[in-house]
Image 1 (cartoon, rainbow, N blue to C red):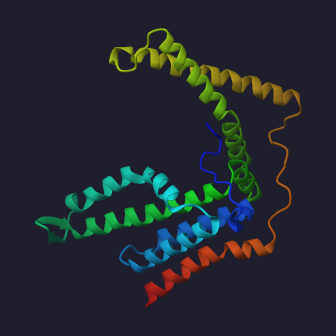
Image 2: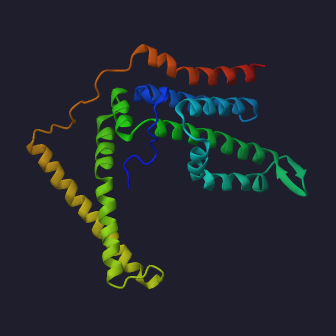
Image 3: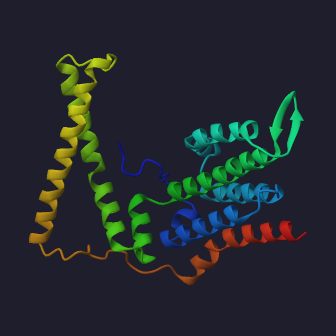
Length: 250
């Protein structure tokens, strides 16, 4: 398992942007999407076009995005239920009595959720996990969060390998996950994996302290992003804000 499973190595202008400018652009774009009133439909079409343009510039395939956007399916299923279970004014459609407020709520969840997921996927596809952490550090994110994320990425592959070896050991001893009464072996394995991770964390921390660790990792972020990159990245949130304002004020 890779520590950066969503990153696509492409020679594109989006990939060459500094990570902090991409993080800020994605957050601002998401804020504009969330702040847009759900009663206005056209702005969301404009937001989708903006993301399609960014995806084309970043050379991220549409199928790749759509396949990984299925992570929001549980929320889509919830949205489908809202028009049926909602209260208030109702309309009839194909023999069904649907709540108007529920329809707006379902549209709100699907539209904003999908755009947010796609924007996050574009950020992950154009930025490595290490660069994301560097970008957060440059944006003065609390160091405790960036350090936890750093260690998580560093040891994720180690934990996955431990879990895989433990599963192979269980199977070699007759473990069959199809039987419910054998779930105890799985629970014991999870507990053992937790203990191994805890003990490894203690050893790593003691090793770091013995080498001069004082609560903050060495800064390796290099030079901050130039002004030109901030201007280029601002085009997405500025364009989205313009679309929202033009439609709402019209």
